[in-house]
Image (cartoon, rainbow, N blue to C red; front, side, top):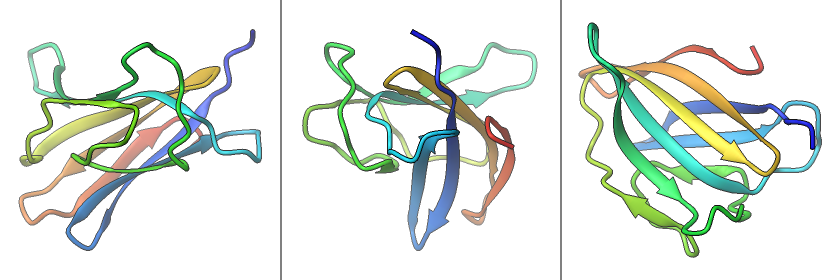
Length: 119
């Protein structure tokens, strides 16, 4: 099976941090098996910060969108603290592939997008 790349966005919507994802070259929204936020700290390995995952790695359709920190039926939400200022990467494992978006979370809650798959 070929790997399908996913385009990932992390944006602010009111007080929420929202992750959206889609296949790069497919019109359908992909099912997801894992969304992982990792915090990048200079001089250290990136640390796992928040994980939404399928308990059995089976992708589940959530409509291509997830609000950071919220529970989703059929998926397990592991530790998911509030974001603190810093650099992060959001990785999304979808049916048949994955995608990543780097971003900076500022002290005032704004998100500065960095590079990501699909740019």
